[in-house]
Image (cartoon, rainbow, N blue to C red; front, side):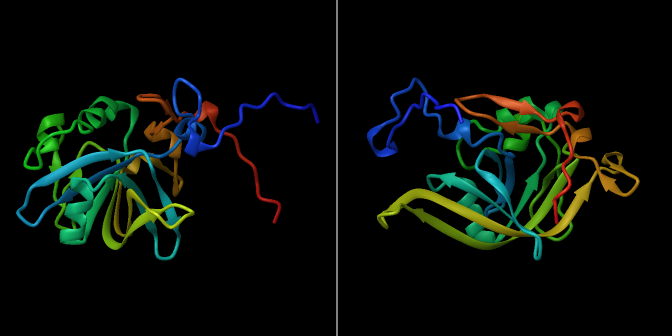
Length: 207
């Protein structure tokens, strides 16, 4: 193996680069485009770049929020939320919902999106999104460092209790990931990738 010229650093002492490479290295990441509602009925829609799926049975997804934001507060209050697939066609709409606005501001209206009532949860999904998961809260976990010190970040987990999929994305009974042209987070302040069919390849597991 050829020896590499490595940039080494300990995060607690700083990275020494123009941009923190952490979230560019862990990339691409699916976008947690989360809609929620508080007890008073105010609706919130916001994207989170630390998001993924964590369990098949029951199906569980989760997103991490730096700081205690409206989405987390709403979900703690009501126990419900919806995840919406962010696609290339919806990229600018998704980005608009990242704006820091007052809690009573409706991001659906702000971004020109259509709220569609959920079937099993009292939270709207994004009507323009081809895939949505209705979720029930399972856990909110505050993260902590190796030293046990609490971080200013919370991971919200939810069980998927209802799924909406545009039938145009299903071919011969199989969901086609690339057909929806989902976008994924890369790094820095605004880097994204679009998933396309020509960038996909298949590997069958050896077992």
